[in-house]
Image (cartoon, rainbow, N blue to C red; front, top):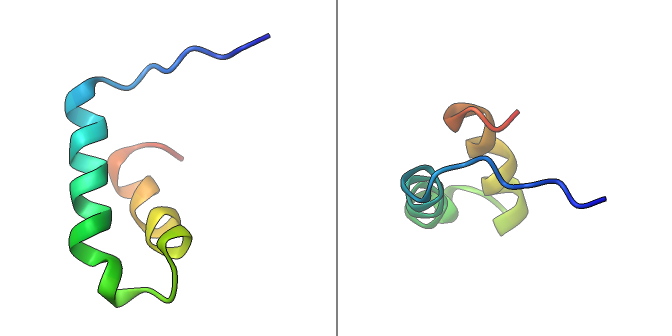
Length: 43
């Protein structure tokens, strides 16, 4: 069963922007995502 995505387009845009802006501070894209996810309420 597929889980629906409950995040608005605005939240997704903000998350992508934050990852891209902070990517240089992390050793990988995944590390940046893991760091930013709790800040936007994903985890």
